[in-house]
Length: 221
Image (cartoon, rainbow, N blue to C red; front, side, top):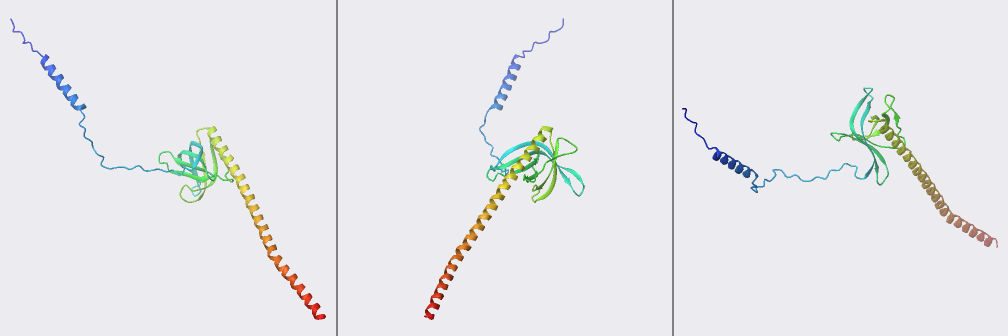
């Protein structure tokens, strides 16, 4: 008759393993209270965009192109957000566009009375215009083309720019009329001043003539 295998009591081993695992978990969760100070202390810096004194009239995603005169071709200027911003004090409106990832300015110019939007012959989602642009830090005469994701967005952009240009034209006409009125007023003032200066001279000359007349009459007597 074969010998029976000895029965091993594994209960104690399992209990010891469980207690060891519990102790390890408790050690991981235990808060030592140690604080690690940052190596470099960063201070908060106020970031300005130059748009703080302006109200946003339009904000849309688009792709901008610039016409290269030397190469006689259109070149992509950037994909990002085009904005129309109206200054809170002087009422002037500028067009600003930044690239999506780098935020680099790819268009920055005023919308003036001579700004004319034209439909692009190759796409009803695009329009073309000329502007004195300041995106590169100096004024340059540029021809831009912009393409939107839909015909509706393109039409909204085009109509708003034309509306702003017309409004600027009326403002410029009023300023011209004001300048003309001021010039006329200054002219009237200068004429009145000349008259007032001439008046005493005439009085003096008349008194002198009277004195001469009296002297002549006395001598004749």
